[in-house]
Length: 89
Image (tube, rainbow, N blue to C red; front, top):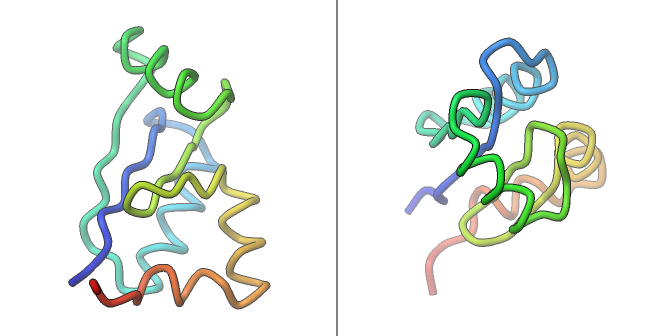
């Protein structure tokens, strides 16, 4: 089963676009994007969950992996694919 990917984002954020492109290149086709620029409650939710103010903030299932640079660092370290391909126990 594919993991649930949730990304807090804004429509014109280049880092959001880069993060989505990396996930798409890994075969992820369904990303729940939560646009925080139009909904202050969702922005507050993101900050409460992550302690961060910047976008994107990315979750793989319930694991907060961070922002775009964090996502690329996981990939470079060889740790992203296992998270994306983990089989449900």
